[in-house]
Length: 231
Image (cartoon, rainbow, N blue to C red; front, side):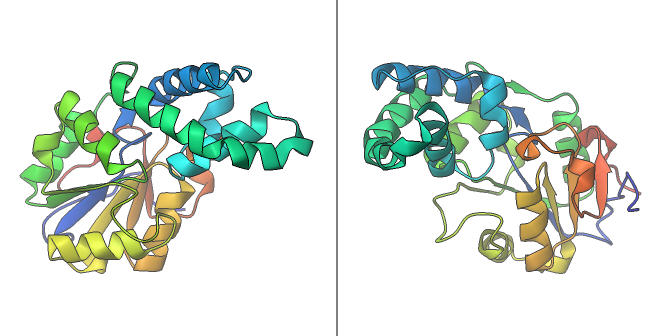
């Protein structure tokens, strides 16, 4: 079994790529509130945060389609797709209004990012969240200053778990994948890292589609980003 801790000296890594939702910030409250307002606009039944949580992680498009399929009868799959454009417009409007207001930075995140920086690593935030949501959230939570690059889910042609976003982020950082640590919370991050050739560590407190993070193939697991430390 991989070690639960992984040292991060400059001799081992040149950079780290860090996921956002479920890794640095608990944004489930933001998702739930924006979706609550969206469903009200569409005169559809409400859905609670516990039902939303397993749907998080594969981008806003996947999230909204999953929510629509959940609140509409199975026989109305065509209706769900027909409602998607209006749902997306409402969701985007509401999310931009409440972005960061119902979310919180996880304990240990600032300390972990400080340790990575102190070890000499360049940092990038790579998330499946749209860039228009990601940048303002990082700024609102005081995390933007840690990162040399920030890429949302709409920055590249494909999203995680495809390796393309990680490879493109490594290019932007000027680092080799093998010397770039991926830090995330889900199988999306781990699968993308494995395919890109990046080592990967998962936090144990994130979303991961409702499954334990330790069930995912990774090089290490941490209960807090503060556990990432220079050797």
